[in-house]
Amino acid sequence: MTETTLDMVRSLLPARPPESHKGTFGHVLILAGSRGFTGAARLAATAAGRSGAGLVTVGVPESLGDVVGAALLEAMSLPLPETEAESFSAAAVAPALASAAARQAVVLGPGISQHPETRQFVLDFVRQCPTPLLIDADGLNALSAAPEVLNEAAARVVVTPHPGEMARLCGQSVGEVQRARERTAAQFAERHGYVVVLKGQRSVIAAEDGICRVNPTGNAGLATGGTGDVLSGLIGGLMAQGMDAFNAAVLGVYVHGKAGDLAAERMTQRGMLAGDVLDAIPQAWRELEQGSGA
Image (cartoon, rainbow, N blue to C red):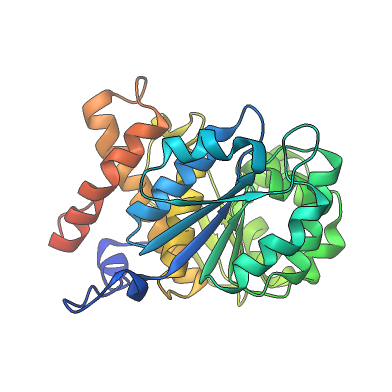
């Protein structure tokens, strides 16, 4: 078990060649949002942009397209077929897969709801998605009800569970997960061939080959709604830039935690929101580039 260090993450920073254009830095597809949870799509998409990705497209249930589009000036939107509850329907699988095939990474799950048809959308999409894929939030809840799909994914996968989601995926209690965080993440990663980010104090990042990193950045101010959506978008954006899934997770978790530390300095841990973490990401990048991060 190795703690992530500043030198380690600095060595992972994607290059920014001066002759680059937006296509150089990849295009990430964010599949997020449902009625009452459009903020999750906005947070994940904005974080993907803050990651340095060149382009971001947000796939949302079609009736929510105008709401999400108005909140996202830099991202493109992709309206997808929806259920009566304004969540992704089974008919959304084909157009979502078509979009994913033309992107470099996909983020699936923030705020998509646990509607039965949306759960089926998740399972069908995960089985067939050809593009490196990060699964979070309600995407993980759908998988916990059909664990066999965990071994059927077509692409490289990163999962980002909090302890409750990890417990459901593993069939354990939250207490059991928390008492053996590193072992739980490593065993799950090796068993299913996924990269696992077990969130929480000293988040654990585990690769399929058993390698683990423990993250030193972050604070209790990150325990607020929406910060997980920010992390998902950040890692997904790094994957879109061509980073290996494990390295993208290591770097993304570190930067997310560092942004949380910077936000807490300004807003206090008690007063900070997920949007404050988003706003602090550029300063976190600056400190890493200059070698002054914690």
